[in-house]
Image (tube, rainbow, N blue to C red; front, side, top):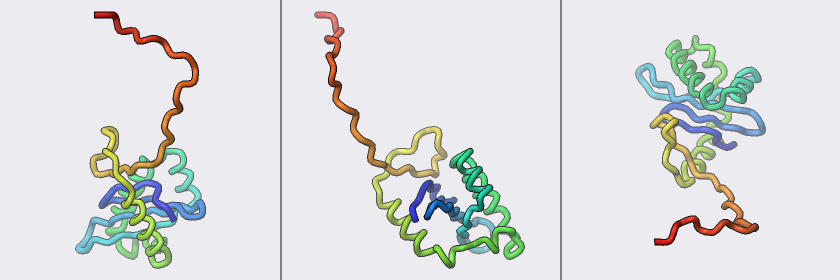
Length: 135
């Protein structure tokens, strides 16, 4: 299992064997808790179309619906009992990676982590001379 996206204190999207799992921090009620929902085919398709915007909006839907407790349509879909340890390990690994500043277009509560990006190749052809005029 690995983390695809993470918004601290809100939600985390995991992937395992091409299946997607959304962990949502539930904020309503007397106690704070989380649910881990395995996304179905239609939800996974929406994620592939709209990315983290879909996940952020869907996490809000899940959070709001959990106020209904056992009557929430997401309650029976909570698979935390089966995947909690794997999800916790994946999140711990993710958070152990070096952080980079959040880009302005992202919400301030989201954390982005560095990924290894290959260094640009050195130019191999001729380069233009310095265009700075003599003083």
